[in-house]
Image (cartoon, rainbow, N blue to C red; front, side, top):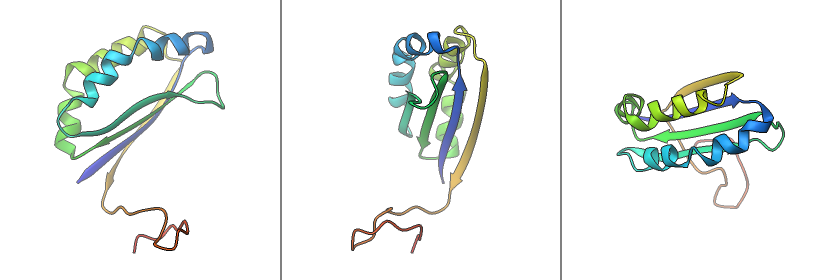
Length: 112
């Protein structure tokens, strides 16, 4: 079953840009891993301290491999070196997915 990870990482605002720019090798490494569908660390345009994280993995096993590997551990050390002020993360198993827009082009919350 697919797994989605969502996180918010807060750094001192003056350190966020440098932290993200120099994190690119860890991001690229994660994207190259088997089972990685999406892996994005981006600046939150509404909060100068916040980094938004979105990850999508093909399975729990793919995520487990990532969490035990050098790209995750490297990113953890890297971001830590910039002084994380706060962080919140959650993972979700996806049991159903579908398009946001139906055949008529209308956005819906339905999965049918």
